Image 1: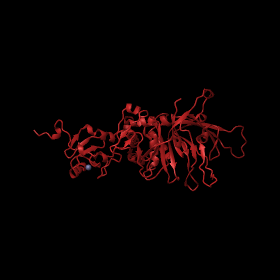
Image 2: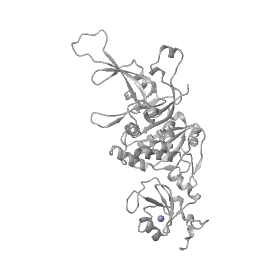
Image 3: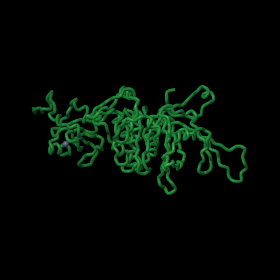
Image 4: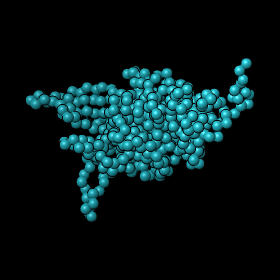
Length: 451
Ligand SMILES: [Zn+2]
């Protein structure tokens, strides 16, 4: 009878567990072999952090184990750990923190307390962080992607959906899988440090958008957000039917558009203008900023003008006509508000020479209790009964600097401690809400206030 191997004996403990170095472990990057570049059956060497393919004889892991005397390897697909070159599986509860970092998982109970119980976590380097307030690497011009992810990752129904992979693992969409993985990392208390890299999501975005959005090129976050919402909706099986994906259930509202046809020359003045009304769904509302006047003060400095958000929202009052390029006029009024409202404050435009121009006008808005009642179609009875539509700001994306070389950051409200934070790539800092209401806000996310 063959002699039993030491690891087949009861009570055996892998002697190499102490060689694992958590400080070098990073699972945010593309899971590809550092030698062959292949991306299937990849393991991380838990001693030096490098990725290698395979664990059988003559594989990259096996060779690395012999050459470097690094013995502990984790399969990046399923989190199982093996000791090489012996080849036995290491089953030890001390590995759980690494498995949790590789693949953060949440119970429905844990998800349900994220907005009420602040959690403080400590990274392996001793730094403290709060799950939900995690910095994201800027991988060459990807600050515009980061601010969108930071905003979406804290919209409760969307976040809660993506924290539970059972909601979408069967879809086999890399975009959905990587977006979900990043949301889980942002909220995980098991990170080894208070920041993660969105590298794998960016790879999926580049692929799904056919390089329309890519590393190395800053995009317009509103273009990206619109694309991402539609792409996720479609990948999640959403259709034109109302509420057919978590994206539409969260953000979709509707607006009534009344078009007044321009009269041709020589036509008789009609008694009434011909009007056609259509009701259209929206995932965000776009408002225009009034042209910036070139005022100068007594010292000849340019004054940055300020307008209240309500002046921009007047577009949706159902009265103020908006002139179209062809001379038609349109009136807009909201017929249904979503629970979570996205407002796009249009401040970028291409001039006649196709250069990007930015309107720096500061838009003032209330951080709490933004009242949209004047822009929503309501019956006389509803108005008389004092029905209102109020929203609290959840996050605001803003642009700083010139249109082509500036940078984006996001102000986010953290519900669990009712505080505001500025998220700019890797940095997360507390901020006073008064600063947010006088910023060059570009995209805003609102939550309907409880009636
Ligand atoms: Zn190694």
